[in-house]
Length: 250
Image (cartoon, rainbow, N blue to C red; front, side):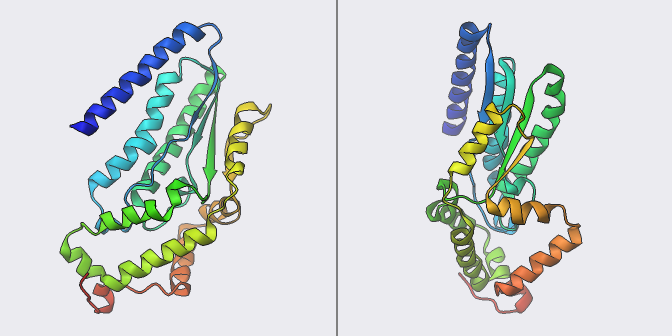
């Protein structure tokens, strides 16, 4: 009930602001709107998650962005800029709710890009890789892992303690290895999308987005899966306990 009340107040505040904007800017309109709000949500394999995990993440990452666009669209005369993610282009295991919301948001942006072009409004998407932000902080990711442990006991037994903690450890290692501290690359992409004479429809931001995930996303699916299996072997990720028959309780 509290969450529903907060959502209602946020919507009322948003549309109240839009009404005021209509009154004060009804002649000039807005040059652009930027969508950059997002949450990671609970993470880990789908067996550990619930429908509510997916809904909560989508409520911010997808529905929140759509609400903003639909509220401000009548005012926009120039550009709509939205942050999706490399997870909206290439699915990473263990990030189900986040990846699903970003794929859907990418689809939404692709749809309205063709529709709004008829009115002279352009739509631009930023696809950043991993950056050192609150989203990828150890504390934030740890919350998602701990939430996953509320899954049924039989799920824990199927995967086993070794699998869970090894995946957790490797996740933190990968985030530390791949996350860039050069946040300015993202803000510069926003600025270019809003102000450039010839902005790009898509911005691949970060070395991992440019060199790793974007190329991977255009590979045949079978090759993508093969690369994933090779990486799991290289990283020495154990098989789930049900597969290896080494069941250890949490």
